[in-house]
Amino acid sequence: MIDGQVIEMLKHCGTLPIETGNLILRPFEYSDAEAMLRYWVADEKIQFMYAEPVYKTLDEVNGLLNKYISSYEKSDYYRWAITDKDGHGCIGQIAFFLVDSNNNFAEIEYCIGSEFQCKGYATEATEALIGYGFEKIGLHKIQICTKTINLPSKKVIEKCGFTYEGTLRDYFYYNGEYVGRMYYSMLKDEYEGIR
Image (cartoon, rainbow, N blue to C red; front, side, top):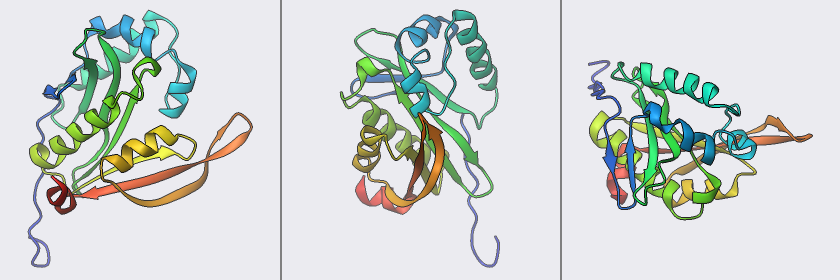
């Protein structure tokens, strides 16, 4: 208790599988490497929007998988392979990439291969993570951001019920121009009100 307020501790549980209507979110496996390379990690546009480097070879992807898979031993590490139930394998990823246990919040990041965009998968995966964060982990706040030029991601974020907080202007430099970074958030009581 601090100044009469009860401070809740997070219930870290790691990256457990989540099933939705069209997707299975699960921990990454080394067998995901080929699908990752085929669908998203080698795509420059997707990786720029996701603010990650481009991976061109299976060796590079396996190096990334080493990093992901070795981190699963930590109970506060949350990163899922997004797989569709149509059997394409790993079509993207979603994570709480920033987890602040002192202040009870986390930030979501996601990406979906271009072949699988505009099918509702990003929204479905994000809604699943929102529920996981508030219900399983006990977060007080979940935040998410996108680049100002990423209109499809902005639509996903707004469809999920996040509140716009503000834009960090000229945050990224891309193709000869500056791009802003838009921040959104959701509080636990807001989630409970829309659930």
